[in-house]
Image (tube, rainbow, N blue to C red; front, side):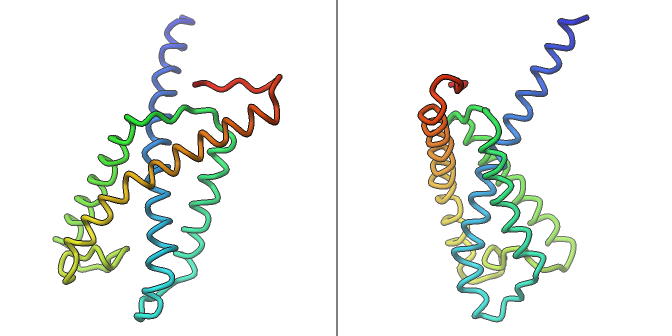
Length: 158
C-alpha cells in the first residue's frame, strides 16, 4: 500500500515540475514582451491598456519569482522542449479561436492579418531561448546564494 502512494506521489511530482518549467519560461517570455514591447510602445499607438492586464502581468512575474525562491525543483535544459510545445499549443489555440470567433488578439502584433506578423512570430520563437536561459540562470543564482548564505543547512537537489 505504501509503495503505491509513493509511486503516485512521484508521478505528480514530475508533472508539477514539468508544468512549472514550461510556465516559468512562458511567464518570462510574456512578461518580457509585455513590459518591453507592449507597455512602452503600443500605449502610444492607441492600444487600450486596462488595469487588469497591468495587474495580471505584474502579479505574474511576482508570483513566478516567489515560487522560484521557495521551491527546490531542478531546471534542466532539455525541458525547454515542454516550453516550446506549450507555446505552440497556445498559438494554435489562438488561431483556432480567431478562425471561428471575431475577437481581439491578446497580443496585437501576433494578429495574422498584421503586415509584419510572420516577422513577429519568428522573433517570439527566437526569444524562447534567451527567456529560458534567463530563468535557468536565475535558478542557478538562487542555488549559489542559498549555499553561500546557509552553507550548513542548504542542500540543493542538483
